[in-house]
Image (tube, rainbow, N blue to C red; front, top):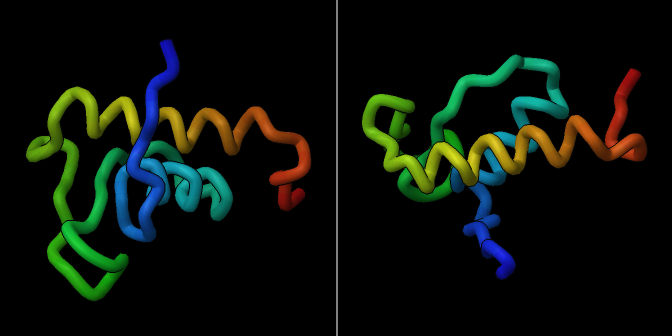
Length: 70
């Protein structure tokens, strides 16, 4: 069974990939709307599934050699 994540800009998956790409470290969060233009939801306010979305984005970016900046 495949899990589908919300990959919208500002969503948990998107924020996970961005944090990995910019080497900011793992810090689960997302934005209710577009990144930086809407309220942020930090880990303490996230559901377990939203945290898994964030971690999937972070981990998939870390595992993809084409996404390496350095």
